[in-house]
Image (cartoon, rainbow, N blue to C red; front, side):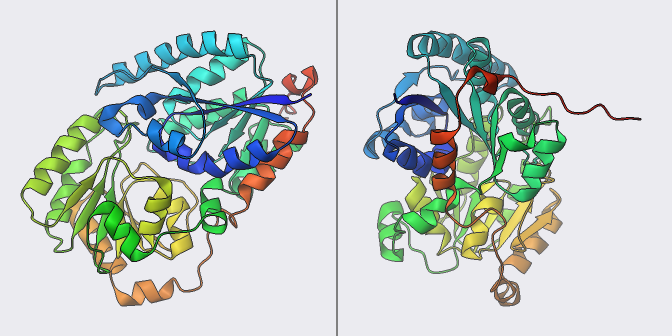
Length: 385
């Protein structure tokens, strides 16, 4: 009998992490894999990234849920719409195991539906930390709702166990996003230039900046970032922010900024292979994306991490943290672009694994017993104090 495993993906970011997990699970003879796409995957505003999944050969069941909104209320209603759609879908499909990743707020919907339908949950990236976003609370909630934990680092594994999860349920597997580097073939400079239609001469700086969702004003840091970037003579390549409250305002600011400069570019959607290939040819990456922390170290790429969104996340020596202050950002960028700093990264290692995460995940999920006892979690010992 094949075990029915369903994976939910809601954005280009989590799909790029899950791609090789899809591939490895699909190869397992005892696994019947289903993929559910929702959220910004189905949104023209965010590049219709559903087409990327289809091009990779995966069939998806699609759940429309993302409101055309730029507010926290819109985010909350999106969770509700996703819950309604997923309830009908899971009730019909009845997967024996649900796989979720990371910390996007939409993931609360499939986790809640699975809880009600008694479907065990496996979760990737529990135990990570990002204090400046609601993602941190979402990730911790998903951890407590899940039954199998697949962490990116040993520190995260210990953190999940400290949250009261039984040790046998928790596996340090690394970040599956790094599997592209060991299993895929990255593009050449010329191929990336042709794909993006921009020249890459070693002085291009990419900007990936997302709303700071822990703050009431989710774009409160943006003015300082743009002020610092205005002083930078390099070609800037902006990549679209996440579909969070404040993303539309950020997009307006980006387009207004680019309109005053001649060489800067904006990309709505970039597939995972092209994106990782691009990292090879950048001078630096600036913003507050987890990608700057999780993937960039594998390319020894200098990263300027701005503000509080990624506060607390484990990072390599390639990351320069700075407050959302224009002068501090500018100083950090100058350090990142210096030949001395780049040379200092020669021997760094990525703390998020070796690029063989997906095989480990597939092995665990295709062999772990799926009896009813998997749903019953023993409580942690009560502290004596």
